[in-house]
Amino acid sequence: MPSTRPRTSIVLLVLVLAGALVASGLAGPVIAAGAAAGPGGTTAATADRVEPAPRLEPTTATTAAVATQDDRPANPTTEDTVGYVEGYWYDDELPVDDQSDAVIDDDDLEPVVYRAMARVERIRNLTFEEEVAVDVVSRETYRQTNDERFENYTTAERLEQNVGYEALFTVGRDTTAVNATRTVYGGAVKGYYDPETDEIVIVSENPEEPELDELTLGHELVHALQDQRFDLSDLNGTTQDADLATSGLVEGDAKWVEREYESRCGIQWDCLEPRDGGQGQFDVNWGIYFAIYQPYSDGPDYVDYLRQQGEGWSAVNAAYDEPPTTTTAVIHSGSEREPAAVSVPDRSSDGWRQLTVDGEVANDTVGEAGMVAMFAADAMNHDQPSVLDATDLDIVGGGRGFNYDHTVTDGWAGDELVIYTTDEIDNESDPAEAAGQAGYVWRTEWQSAEDTGEFLEGYRELLENHGAEPVTARENTFVIDDGGYAGAYYVERDGTTATIVRAPSVAALSNVEAGAAPEAAPGVGVTAAIGAIAVSLFGVGTWLAVGRDR
Image 1 (cartoon, helix red, strand yellow):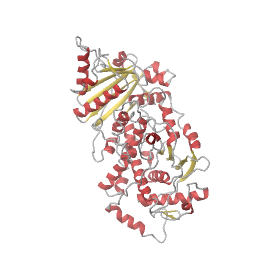
Image 2: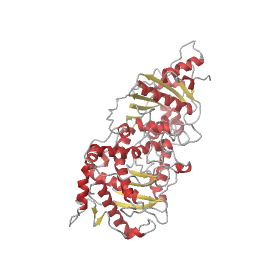
Image 3: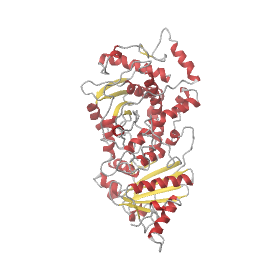
Image 4: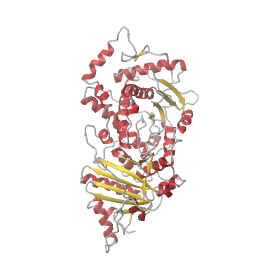
């Protein structure tokens, strides 16, 4: 399955929260959403910045370090003095502080950057090893650069992305995963740090006089500091879940610092803030967005957990040697769950086979965060029912993050999703048509039988929300006749294991996965057969939800 980050360039981004929240009367957080890896694409939008975060008091272990910072040496150096960079202290006053806007001339940009670097050092208690290049560009200029990052996908990679998103009911066949991703990045990004060039770019909504958002700058400077100290290029996960988990540490660290930075602006420090609030304009795919946002929602609490359990920032620094490997570890800080090993051996036939990309089977681990995003993908669509709604996600609460801890997903132990194709599909020129003809097997493992049942009940509701009807002649088989997710679905439960198989037709299900969609026992009435399906999948008491004649 694809990464949410373009493969041609790994960057750490700041995204704005979607304006749909504001239009709906719902308050949401301003997002520093980075390039966490997910099933291929992202979304976000605009909102006013919420009230400053509560001041996070330093732990006992960091108090001594702060006191040392206040005892300023007579001859400070950039390399050795926390809170001092290239002649500027973190609390120095600059001429730009008296401006009514955040338009910065080239001559004034360097002092602002140095002071911001010193401020990040002051909070993070680490010094930069070298300077960081910063540029401020217009939205139009950024879009031109952004489009180039999405041009080098192969046909197999595009199929992988499209089917991966379809499996999570987030991108249907009315668009492609690449286009969904490109649209979001082009409209939502407020700034980014590129480890390949060691450069920060701040994106301004004012094309005539680009403005600098100091909080965005501060967030991205944390990424530059991380790269200098911990080498971010070594922190890429091999699956969607692992990549998002790593981002829980990386983005959680940056977001923690950003919130503390924000709490000091206007009180201890003068800070630059754009007149337009840094609002972007773009389309929103909420399923992708909720997956991408998880590291920024749960990451700061995860970082705070590390700080409280260890010796302040030293515990966070040590975590870069062994970052979290599952989003479950970030969502449930301190749970220390070991993920279960899940495999999907190839049991296909009649010309079907597992898709390969660059010589490797196209498989991925969705993880707990990805599953929450799947069940919440329709939460902001008033015309479509959703398994998890805005209240479940705590959007209505208007806090600084969303709720990713839900009974339908919190028993996750492991999963693997594998995409299946044929020669005919490989030669299909229309990406949407190819995705519709492809198949997949998604095997999930759960902590308990109860957890398995809760997930399957949620998945049944998801199918029903998208028009699925049970196939009475087959066991545990459903069909969506039309729309972006049309196809046949087979669901099998074996103890704490749940397997989902999708193919373009009921007949093809057993060709994708041997034994899928077996014929129902003869002589069983329609309603009784449907009821038996529901009981076997979801437990007694749920069959009425799907027990209807076709």
